[in-house]
Length: 398
Image 1 (cartoon, rainbow, N blue to C red):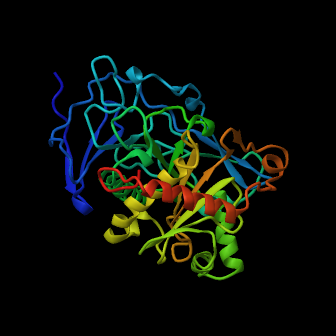
Image 2 (tube, rainbow, N blue to C red):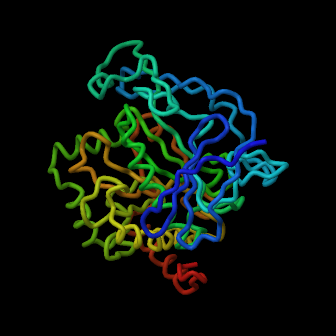
């Protein structure tokens, strides 16, 4: 007999309820109930017998670029596009011993095959202390041949829905608001873990992007270093001005590349967009991460983000693959200068064509864009206008 799990319950913003527990192997599992949830308070126990968690991966330094490369052999055997009867992110059934024991609205749990973690710089909760952990940003910045460190950190899966198919854009406004609250809550919690330097919520959508599960979900990566892209951003801020993001926002708001503008957020195709489809969504005030957004900003973000994603899907007759990347300021540096923003990109350059990174772009990081950013913004505005003519029952664009 398995007793019901202990649930640590707390009501968050907008009436969303968090219920935290653990899986059979000790990994964290957190349920987030919609404000209008029809679920009860209890959750089933995870009765599986699971293998011990894999050892934490190792990072190796590329001395030419200064980048740290994680070598995580445990990820080689991940599940690839299973059928609905073997969906590892669906609620458990007698025939499907999945990762989530109960029916849920939104569920977040530690990845069984992480690139970072489960060990941390210091033992915390069920996470052990890593041997050879990074000793701060100065340690990671030092160049040298053959340098290694343990890949401490955290990788979590964020299930947007118990349904087998869909994406963030297919959710209701209420559900989108729950996911946003979960992102903010997890950003705050993970920021307090020892050795975490940056937190990255994202959604990969579509097989062309490399998605291995069709279930509507995203992920959260917590790195033991400041990522290479954010390092470049910090360098640009140092070379220009501490209010660079505000200057960018004001410049874009005066351009023809604006897709739409709300009270707290503006969506625009950036001046130097790399991808055939690229759009940024940025708050109007400086805020370093989702945890620092206000209730009003989160309330507006839910319908605006759905409006953007549904416009992306209205561009073509079939769903468009994309990466929805929430860039946040690092945990310990750049908090006053790096602004939270979404960068949504897609390699789709026509209904039947994809942009592949080869030669110049893949090897030399020298990009050539096929779609002028102004044209990309116009096409996206027109697609969003078409979806706005057919709202869903919950009032969101179709």
